[in-house]
Image (cartoon, rainbow, N blue to C red):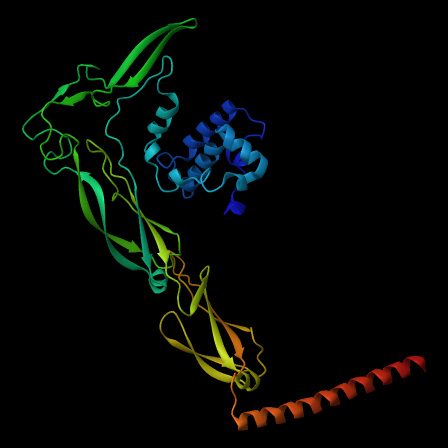
Length: 382
């Protein structure tokens, strides 16, 4: 994987001597440009993941030092893996959240009330068969997750009661503290801890969820697996993650696929590899044989006389479908000549006779080669 990664400095468009401020400015600019909430073009989400991965390393002095010395190999399996952004944009659920992370609490800066946040994404590991990966399938899974409380409909208050304005922040959801420094007045804006940024507090909590606005349930979800998926692919089910406290947009469910190996078939990209054992006589004389395919149909393959072990034959369009496409790979049949391990007396006698004839033929060929070489040498001297 590391061999396919772009240089992190190139990703952020900065020099290797860039300062921390230059790296942060480059990240802010590119994150704004490629954040999925602001950029709906194809490939923007993948670019945003790549940008965050680069910033995660280059903004950390220790990780950056290891990367400068050893490249991607120096990061190990944890640093720079981009795991937090590969499947979860919960940290920056909107473009406003992105700037809130960098600019909240600055002098004279503006802030917004913190409302219901996006729920957490969920990860579920699912094992499917080779055939299910090739042709797609539907799977029903069960997973525990936080769901909106049906009793209070997610607001956390007991039905029939109302919330009151927070006395700590006066309903703003923010606490502002003014500090004096040698540079002048400094305003520090933080989220109100009492109401958690909502501006209102619950006087009578819901008896079912105890004011959380959500409850823990086991949920059955139908997952559509598209044809052509491979081992390690993530299938996203939008909106089937957890809900946050006090409502908010649910997160997503990411189903990580593990594909069981097949007894006979192997996969290379969208092609299928099948090794066909044939006998010495089939290879020498030629034959027509039935070859199994992943479609559970047999197709006839003609083996020409004199076929060598390891030769490959292509069955066009009999491979793995390309995900979300009508295209399909090929099946490659590789013949393997099998040497017999036990022979009858008649078979042994016939092979010995064949070996004798083959030796005579080889000796005659050697004589012809020597004679031709002698004639050519004589011509040269004449």
